[in-house]
Length: 136
Image (tube, rainbow, N blue to C red; front, side, top):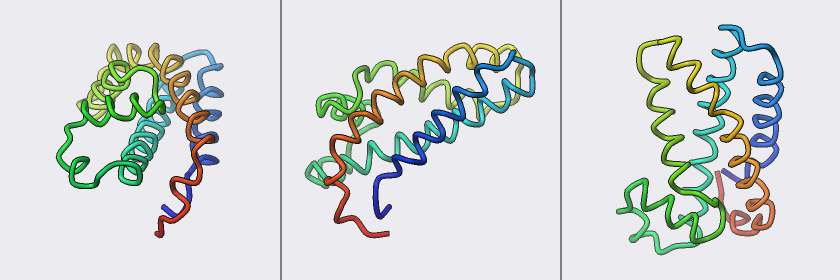
């Protein structure tokens, strides 16, 4: 990652918002969940990359995911590590066999996920120099 993927994150947020405006058909729900999966993947990767640049690498290397979320929250990038852990659990649900009931439940959480991603994006925009020295 040579720079923060802020434009990509913004485009994914906008895309997810756009699909949520539509009346939720199976196709819209599936599309929204796919966008959620990708946005979740990129945002959590950015959080981890941020820690690699701001923390002792040895300490970071041995952290569990909840520890990473706590530390990212302490740094002010996210405001609710419990909610982000919930998103992780939801992401795991998307990897299981398709179930319309689960898909609809995931779909209902997406507006909250968008809000949390927008908060993260705003915080990242205040810290772009952290990533300036990283090479692809």
